[in-house]
Image (cartoon, rainbow, N blue to C red; front, side):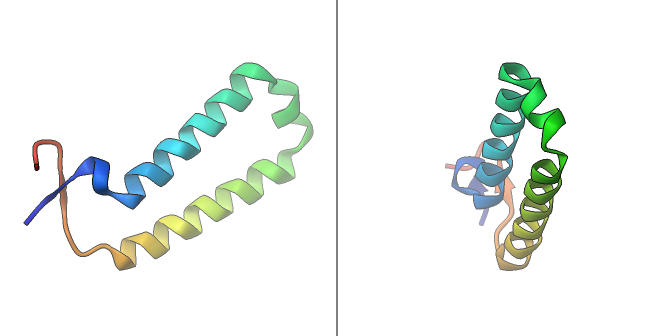
Length: 66
């Protein structure tokens, strides 16, 4: 049984991460450029959470599942 993508924790983690990166890049590029260690740390956290969620995931997702 497939679940809708909006029920996927991995989807939401990646969507929020993308929004944070885009906002940081668009609103204050100097903040990102002056704090590369923050960017590296955030990337490591996201990668780790994605791996954890991958092991916890038991159902495939679908764009059309209800």
